[in-house]
Length: 385
Image (tube, rainbow, N blue to C red):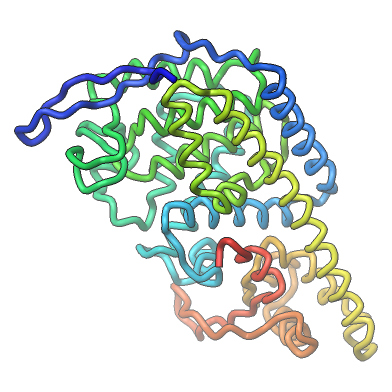
């Protein structure tokens, strides 16, 4: 295999190094053979089947799926936090600021932004990538000057410097042409969708346009492409499949850089198909859990069985894995007193668990947190524990 690019000499800290500059996508021959095309088509079919499992009231399930994607994408980069803390940061329940949980929550927010952008039909721009990066890096230790902007310094992947790096990425002078070429490819509508997502992601990772967070932004790009091209309400959690085979993922990206785009696309297509199956499994598990809750409520006293707020709260749980009386009151348009009583009733039958309290940002008593351990287990399942 011949590398799909070339090396250029650059000077870094007074030393001469060799950086890899990928060939422009417009200049690469990216045709598929029959087996690769079949795998890509099969992946698209699996995603379509997963999409059909979403009913009209899909938003709570979509939120749970996006949370799985955000947690997994961060996990791939070694950024982990307890799922409860991530949800608290996501809900901004007194946990604004820095830390791993806020960083993972930022990943989820960036994916949500990408889906909204894809649904709107607007073409992708370099500025859009920068907006995702700014959202993603909220709460990270990355210096503010490097957030939401294309890097102006030499980058590398692996190692402590370009001298011992796994890959020295393109010098800043090459980034404008490379990104414009990538954006042109991403916005095409005459390319197989799964292939387009695979190629776009791999090329983005080689370009490595940001100082940090490139892996996560690159996987947000996957969500954007699949949502746009397959007309999805929510993309499958592809990062969950990637997290289960990080070695295969890394090897596939190397193969793409070496010129073997077909083996990379084959691996990626299988990951997309696995993400589709994971989506269907998660939806089925949520429905099973909710039915178990209903059965549990039906076995309790008549007062609980006749309380509409109790059953309405069950449908909110996939969206809000952590509930407070204020959240429930706002969602169901009931009083704080009624919402707190509802939460305690659900806790008494084991559907919710009191997690503790969190200080309010305004005056008043701390809010009591209630969590669904059953649903937290789905979001934090292997390989994400």
